[in-house]
Image 1 (spheres, rainbow, N blue to C red):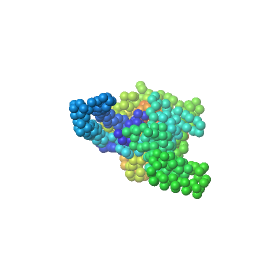
Image 2 (cartoon, rainbow, N blue to C red):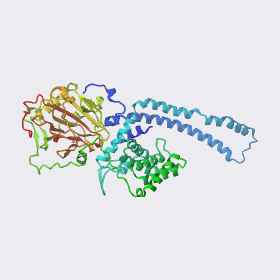
Image 3 (cartoon, rainbow, N blue to C red):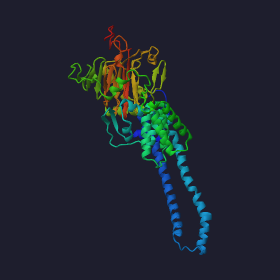
Image 4 (cartoon, rainbow, N blue to C red):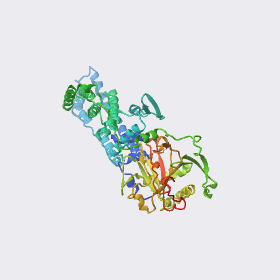
Length: 544
């Protein structure tokens, strides 16, 4: 089984609108939604069945070979075996002329492996692509960065934040699942191939450490070896400016592969460089973490993902309160919604138990067959980008009566008109491995934005429903408001994107923090300006 399949499966253990389901399940996008990663378990179960049949066939074949071996060995162990006996002489000649040839050239072994290969080829089209392995590896690096995770800990299956000498457990899995040297090598190599030595070095160091510990053991599934890891790590250190480490690792490589002329030349090169600059022996270049894309608010964003920011407790600011909300609407009189005002400027409210478990499950089931890689607006284009990792689907109100009921509830609670074209269809999002959406605005910031194609103005408000819970991570961080809201199952988060003047509220810059552990689903209802003129009257004051 290839490394892409194994790592995608490993990590798994941790609208209806336009398009069709077959296209939605395109290879190379498995990593971008946890529901797609979970589907990857199905072909692996088929592969396990194929391997089980292969092993049974091989076990029977080996039992027969053992029988032949024992039979012949017993003849040789008997020092008095009378070769003068014509029957024994005949069987000796027959064995050497015929039996051994049949054993060595038996078709049974090739038939067994051929059946396994044929079965694999039939399943292969359903397996994650190499792009998924790259995406999954980048996800681990993202989690490593945002949550300041220790690579050695990750390799042991432990999620620990390391800040100086302080170690904090962010998540304690019920069962530890450690990575192999080959797993760590694959992550490091993805970074290495991108020229990202900041991430490549710690992962390759862990790969070298694990390979050293198991040196001499042969694992069929491994693609890399200790020599591969030493080779890549040495060059990564060289590129990072640490010549002494590069030399030490290259010399170690030659202990295992002394005839490698390329590595021998590298050793001479590093020795010459160190002789010319002796200070390189003790100096170590500081490797800067890549900032791609260039995110000015990165430190604030990541800090909010790690904590809840400056979110105050209710007693500190009396104007922040909890209540049973009816919005003076008869629809909610018999079943008011629990409302928690989280922030005033910008105004952010959390509505607890806005949907039931069965409604959340129904929405997920309706959207799942139609999920496609999420995109972002870039001018008039829609692009897939690394800073948004998820899949999404659009559900029209006519798909199921429950969606009509949901719209009535949103309208009653917000007092806004959520009928098309005054609001968009419900967008359902499933986040992938380390799925996230870096700081962004929901409202359009450019006149050429595709949002204006609806001819109903800009997005005045966002109503986001949490359709699942997660074990760790995945908070919604408001950068300039300096607060983050953790995922609250079945709750809904509401905020205004625009001032009453129609200008965008820059304080609504927000992000979906990377999901550390769990399967995060949300549903977004974006409400537009038009149709709300008498429901949320305009104001010339920029503060309103």
